[in-house]
Length: 394
Image (tube, rainbow, N blue to C red):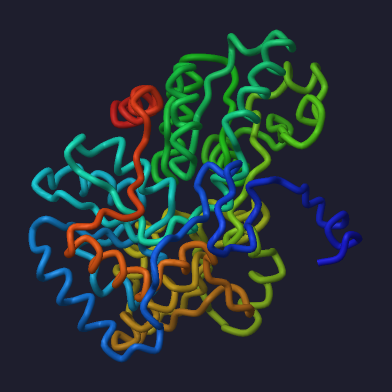
């Protein structure tokens, strides 16, 4: 991408942007990029059997979690599948499992470590499996934002609400300041609670989920929302804007869901007459407004399960899941297509492939602990406060 193109897209450089990943580690990154060890060749014809054998050898000592966006080659070895918070809770419900192998991304493994016992060890098969959205809000940036809100005289009226797709540090910040975590399923409940505690919400790190929930679900106006850009002085906002706003949205987004456009919706309606457009609330506001149905990953799956035979659906979410659902429901005559013409996998989710999983399981079977994700006690304490507040939501 040229400098001119970067400026046109208003893309700001950040040390936590997607890196040219290799064997080096970036000490500035909260998720790290180091992957030690020699991986088996992806062309090894015995990979599936090796993974099966290692998993059988470990027996009940290992519990493998597979996020919906994972590759099929990895999902086949998952003991349970689901979204990030469901998987973390599933791990906590299996205290007999010594190893929790989380086939997802870094912030998900952190949540699992926070919710499991100290005797359990959470493992991420590839430490470079991060989340670009989560990396768009660092602890330092959010602390600076709070200083800006304090200087503007509004911090005492602001309640932070952080999306599950955030680092343990951001969850801990939320807990320290009396806020709550939310998922894409309960974001409206979280915001309702937050507005009972204060006058304003700082929503981290996905601006689209915050805006869509506030405007589409709760009846606020777009004028009630401002976007805080951590790469600009004072977030690019005036004191008056901060004082007038109800929703202070962090300038973050999902690299997958953010690519869907209004043109994508119009194009698929022209190509597939009678299609139902179903999108994730991490999509842009104009896409959500133009869709027929909007909901979390679990909502999308349940909607397709309940859909009548012969119905047509265009899905705006990660391609691994869409392709898996298309294959699953094809025998029922349900036509399911990807909302965008371009192929769009989550690049960091896709870093966990069969070679990484084989290497992880074989290492554990041999008694070698690799790629452990461990949250320090203080961060865990405050992050758990925010997570427990979410669990206590009415």
